[in-house]
Image (tube, rainbow, N blue to C red; front, side, top):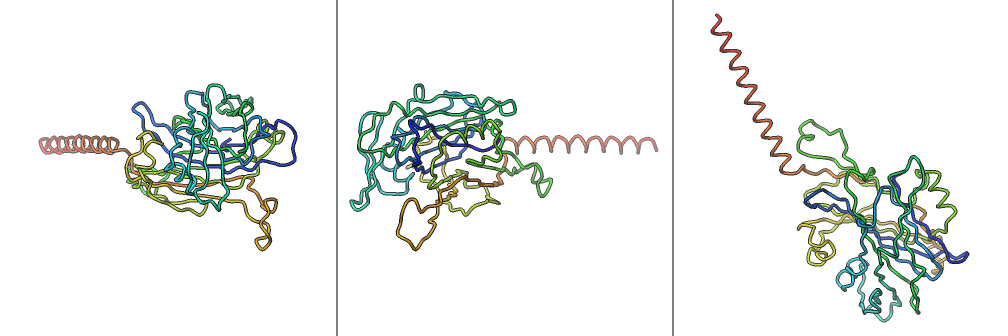
Length: 332
């Protein structure tokens, strides 16, 4: 099971599904002890008034210590504008709510960025299937959120996971030459959301029995070092150099200079582009998948270590051959 899966539990049955826009950032965190893959997920939901829980299946194991809220971190205008690619102004509500509104008075857009309490509003549920033990369902409890006039909310969390536990990110074994294998790697990222066909029967049943969002858009950003080469991707892609001053707080200073953000997006389509715009006339997204490959250099210490072993090996071989030739000449 490699696909993330999203659904919700309603407070009461309703034929109208809430609409959601999904943001995903995928990047690597280099800590002193080990490398972590970081997944940042943002859910912008147009109306949470009838949502009891958001259920989000992740295809790897985790615990609460590896999950953090990003609502407070993105509270400054620069980050809000960078994430949503719009000009917004922000004003403080209560300590957990940040009011966001469009700067242009002609644009009627107001929503809340909400800071989740990981301890009390996040529950981790085992997937309860024998062939899918290393996975969890992250359940976000919205039942205690007091609503006012604004019903549109944005939630954003970060999940850190050791690299070796992410099965849908792996190194391609074969390379074009043996030389490449020593100094470069090719990483494959097979990222999916709501690919139910690849899920277990237990998860499919949970998803089918739950209530579903109407997905308006998915914005998927892969953050890579500028020296990495993208050699394949599945969907149309755009890219830009990440503005370090803007994103420094967001990554807690972990990202270096010259990081490129590769942006893959998918949006709901109008059923008939010539008709008057009506929300129900959209063909909402059911799922999302993207296969990307990156070629990158191995770490400097690996290259150095390989070179040292190669020099030692050549020295040993040359000494051995010299000894053999010398012995042969002496025996003549």
